[in-house]
Length: 136
Image 1 (cartoon, rainbow, N blue to C red):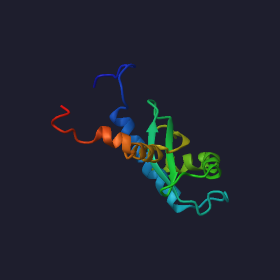
Image 2 (image 1 turned 60 degrees about the horizontal axis):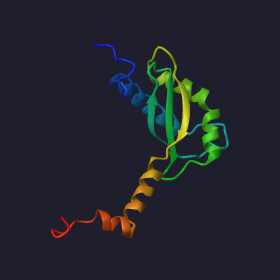
Image 3 (image 1 turned 90 degrees about the vertical axis):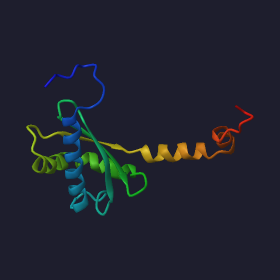
């Protein structure tokens, strides 16, 4: 199998596969919601994506609430619970090293909604609309 060069773009198949396994394991732990932290008690956290570092020692989990932004208090609570979550993920996913977990708010939905609003503006819709034959 050829080695990946440092300049190659994109994650490897292994990085993608392991990140997806970690996402599933992390989602299962968060679904149980057995936390002592009052900021996480009853919280509904969705793990939308996990990105792995090339050495698989660090995982960045992008999280959101159910269809809305995760409050800052819950994001801070997730960061405090990272050692516990790391242990739970390590039990579920067989890796040489238990990956460090880092949490980031997922802003992809907000960005998509912002783009949708821009595209629906009359002046933009006019420019993007179908062209008549006399315009061409």
